[in-house]
Length: 81
Image 1 (cartoon, one colour):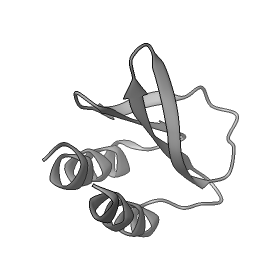
Image 2: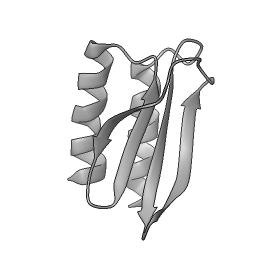
Image 3: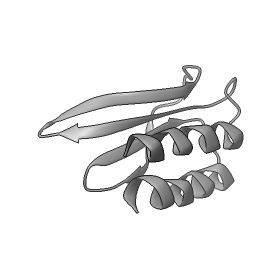
């Protein structure tokens, strides 16, 4: 899974504007959530759940509809798939 996570992170970097947006990937550990990585800078928008699988959740801030769709597609390809 580490390789898929690395590829996901690299490709997500191409989708978001790191100055204007932020995403972070977490892994579910029972009732807790383990932080794996983040891209971008903290935004003043509330976090939104972009995608979720049995084991992982992708959160984002200030993500527009187009980028949201691209990130979901990427998540399904590398993280959920």
